Length: 377
Image 1 (cartoon, rainbow, N blue to C red):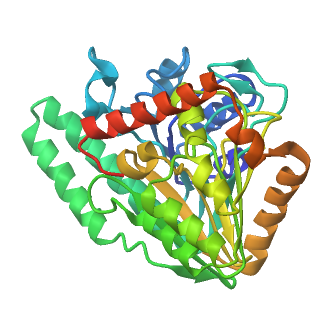
Image 2: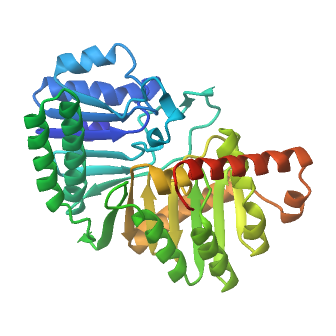
Image 3: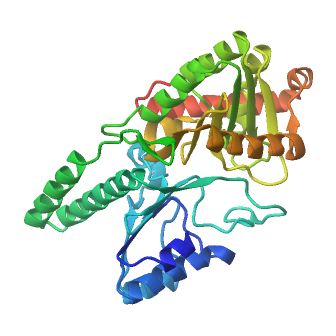
């Protein structure tokens, strides 16, 4: 991505949940600064929870260079006490000159560093995809539309109603040109699949369910925060029951209480159906990818949990291409074989009462959060 930015001539757009400048991640900030200084139009959006404020001295440096940057939905004094504040910008997208795009789960964050846990003993396990061809225009249109909406909201707060109305009109105009339809280039059929709280509320979940329902012999799925709803759980179980081999590569290291323990509360019916569950242990697993039958694949920002599938803005690229899908599958199978431990159904049932209570509490907490948001999952 840094190489693409350094070659950029006209425009760079970047959206990320976390922007951190430890280690190698600072290279991205430097590339944005260099681009703006040579006259490239640069627009950066970060999320107000993942990145409450840009780390010093970068706000001043970016502004001085001419970078336009915004923090999406800052929390304010009440923070996450307001359920409406749980709707975050979680997608990770970048477009350079309308010719190259990036989409995936990778934040602007060093592979060997975690903001909550410090230095890591092994790099974070994650994926992003580099895109060229017709799909790039779809990504660009989506990012442009979102930028105009942020501009409109900020102008409205400043009571610049004329400016806000003009920005909203531009957003509507951009929206008319966002088709989000499959596009083919070099033999690969690809689609940008979004989730937001307006038009695309269930697109990513439906893409997963359709692929799982169509599976004939093999599903490999890696997901950092695995709390799928009833429909996806049924899709996985039905696939296993009709003879499809289903392998799940999930988080094996403790990161957050609710995500870690609530996921374990869902293991029992999956294991009973014959689904193979593997837990990744060398470092934090942050991947959000899947491969079905060695021909359908997805890479993106969306976890299989209620925060991603019901509340956040997410973006996945879905690809129907055997070369792409099988390349991704080889990476996942390597991780399963070398870096993961399979969950034994018997040992799972024999885990301590303390762990079982924690699992039940975390799952209940997740249900309460959904209730407060008026969501069914």
